[in-house]
Image (cartoon, rainbow, N blue to C red; front, side, top):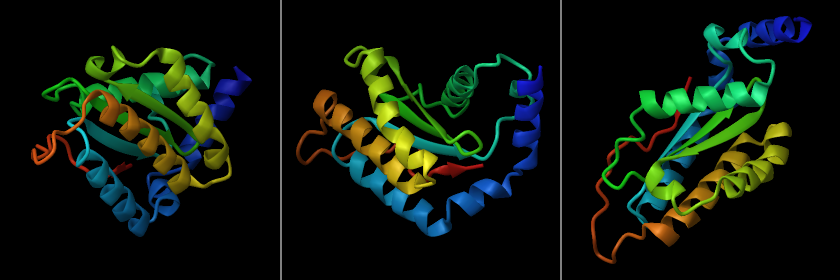
Length: 173
């Protein structure tokens, strides 16, 4: 009970402007350019979402915060229609600032090529930069890993145009 109360206070303390303070506009621009460059090499779609805190409806659920972050990422994956890409190869990179945790959700097209433990390894690599507050470094590392997988399994044919199906600009909320 005490841990859940602490979590509620922590997440309510951070308002929406905390994400804007943690992720400066110039960082958003650089991340957007990296997503755009990545998508110029494969047919996948990558979406970066950064939230300062979980919505209240999540805060009294399971005491396992990693499960909550995963649930939130899955919800956003559906809400933002990342699953609705032509080749079912959309990927969400989700960062929750209050917990300094990252989660990656890939659609079924990519997941048939990538095992769950590989995704967990990628997430583990991101933990250190994120815990040090190096959000741009952590998100860039995640994007590089996701891009490498998409290039391997869904390369864009030379000279073929990339049909952008999702916004490249990170969603900072």
